[in-house]
Image 1: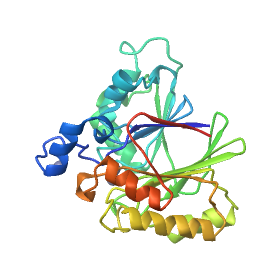
Image 2: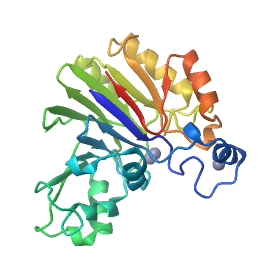
Image 3: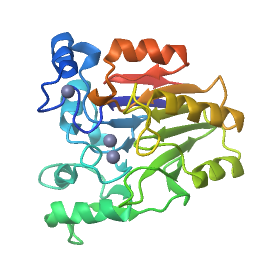
Amino acid sequence: MKLTFYGTAAGEGWPGLFCNCELCKEARRLGGKNIRTRTQALVNDDLLIDLPPDTNMHSLVYGLDLSRVNHLLVTHSHSDHFNPTDLEMVREPFAHERPNVFHVYGNSKVKEKLWEQVPGMTGTDTNLEVHVIKPFEEIKIKDYTVVPMLALHDRNEECLFYLIHQGEKSILYAHDTGAFPEQTIEYLVKNKVYLDLVSLDCTQQSVPDGNNHMGLVDAVKEKQRLIELGIADHNTIWIVNHFSHNGLWLHEKMVEEAEKVGFIVTYDGMELVF
Ligand SMILES: [Zn+2]
Ligand SMILES: [Zn+2]
Ligand SMILES: [Zn+2]
């Protein structure tokens, strides 16, 4: 399997779009891996996770090729994960020679937001299909089995993150979430899941959270819990991702701290094959 991280920042981006704090000024000065766009990832070449406002930039700068993508998993409706207006471009005359249907999977709020913001897409003549999905109900997409997991995040909607199986491999892509709810842990245990790759939320970096997001200490606790339960082990690829300037660590410091506890730190454009 291959997983590419096209965007690795929280909602404001890093540097924050309008921010004048020392960390954002320093990121602008340093450039490179300190420049982070809003979170998006691609599994292999065909399964997209989230549609942030930086999607077009990911296409232009990092070579994200959406001409071959027909399936989008959305974690929740927050603007850094779902910018539905871009979906208007999936139909004629904005996109030619595509298969008939582009599939979007998300909670009911994602569906509402899509129809609200792209009213032209509501007719039966559109080539967009929205699937309202529920936690722990399996979805078959091509040769993937995808299971939405329940997140601990915005209490006003059913926020999800994703367990994705292909062949013998399984990945857990967990953004945005605090500590995993018990139902999520129960599902993983009951189904004897073994995870080859885990990408954990680390929005708060140096600041403990666990309630809506995670800091590094919360990610470490979650890692220990998954290992103790036999869901993952030290051969699992452990990743932290989705960073905010409010977490106070620029890329180099984030890498230094994450290495001590066995995590890889993402950067925009990072590709992992496993
Ligand atoms: Zn987010
Ligand atoms: Zn800032
Ligand atoms: Zn969010």
